[in-house]
Length: 313
Image (cartoon, rainbow, N blue to C red; front, side, top):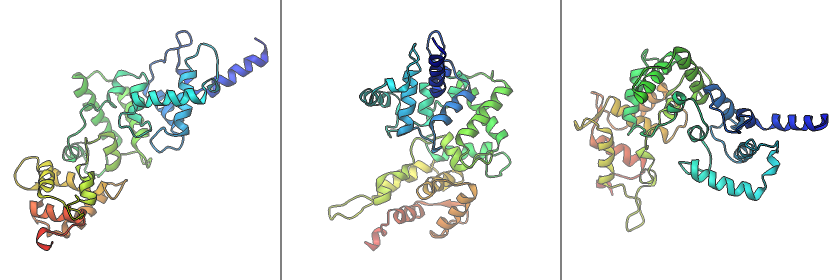
């Protein structure tokens, strides 16, 4: 191979970001450390919006496939027709939520990673509701600052791994590495800590029940008008009244308000939630004991669906 050919191969290797993570003999992907995984993510999520999509996804797929070749072929070896077919098969296998793009958890299932770090992305059993989320938030926001600081996040990750593996064999250095990596992933405003909305992405809830269409546009009755039923309201009350004591209070109330806030605000912190709580509950004659009843919940949901109470219809 002459000098010009060697230079061409060197350039192709430099251009293919994924090639450095392949074993030079077997061509298999090496097991990635937490930092290496984040390097891959940051490289392909070019606009930093939390997804690999569009041309980013095309670029990743081209380099992912061509990096496996034993000969130093560039991304151009994958034709447009092959790319379309590859993308369809790839998304069917890894795009779990079928949104047409790859998020960080979906990428984590594709790339080989350290077992402990991979466990942090495997939420096979997401939280049932934001009530459970707010209980966890209260537990780990130990100084009540309204943020999960780095040391609090490290404690959370340690407990998460301990619960997942039933053992405690993660070194302090690894925990610090995992904490730093998780902050790189989820700390969107780069202030070195997690606010409520950022922690909610790390610890997802199975479903925000209030995002269902009936609470946005109501249900259509025979006359074509929106109709929110008593059964809809009862389902919501049961979801948040976790202790079945007939009222929504404490973390139940905070969980409900968090879900409500997410309908109108993408990025929010504990102060936003406090102000939102005051605004919402002032409008429904808030129970001074810190609870809301079925009647008060009904008023909130009807306002959300822009529907008058039954006695006014």
